[in-house]
Length: 292
Image 1 (tube, rainbow, N blue to C red):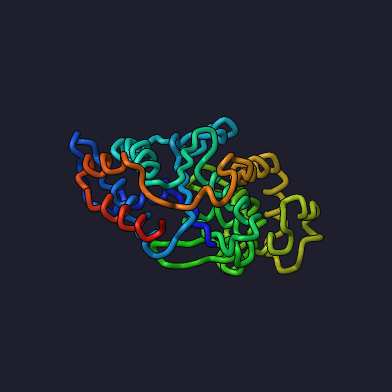
Image 2 (tube, rainbow, N blue to C red):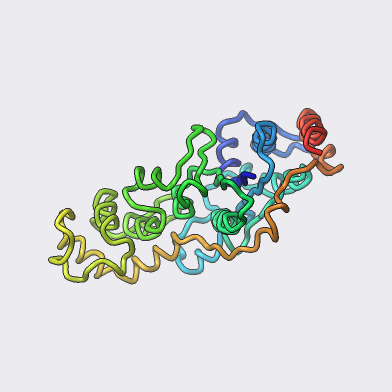
């Protein structure tokens, strides 16, 4: 079997900014929610059988305690934030397993689910459905891969190396030095993408980098200023790497079979009628007749 793990936060943001606004029977904005529901149904229509969706029920996480400047919900449109609980409830009613994250982030749930699914010998391939660079660290060979559904592009381990210049296990170190504007941490002065790729392709982790810049590999230009930046900002680098490292111990599922989609719950019809989208329920019922 294949397992599809969906970044519900990314999908909700993507549909929110791509679709015209639409309100439900109570005036609540729900266009993005309907878009995500339809998108997940499309995956099932194309053959996906085992599905899990992770969402950021609360944008803030344990990382905000470690680094106050880490990303928050500030600036996110309230019409978007208000749809997270609606999406989570609607997906659950549709019969899809949902992981609404509060202490952790959706990325942590995806990383945890990918690691656990990969342990099951009956799983052929795990698709992490998000283009988020953080999830590159969860890629394993050709078995655990990223799927950018919008671009219809699969990124395996060779793809991660081609994009970043380093392998999956070095992604947290890479992000630690170059920073991640989307997540709110700056990286280290002087460390650009090329310098990080050259250095971490030679030394997989920060601890592997020689403290004497004269011992650095000759392919790395400006070794001295890079070394000074790294070791003068060592504590920051370790903190940023902790922020970039996804957790793999988030409770997600007991067995992969728990992710098998079977049919919508009876209350899904109510959600669809409230959203003025009865066709979503019809599609789900039609799919259920095929898989049961």
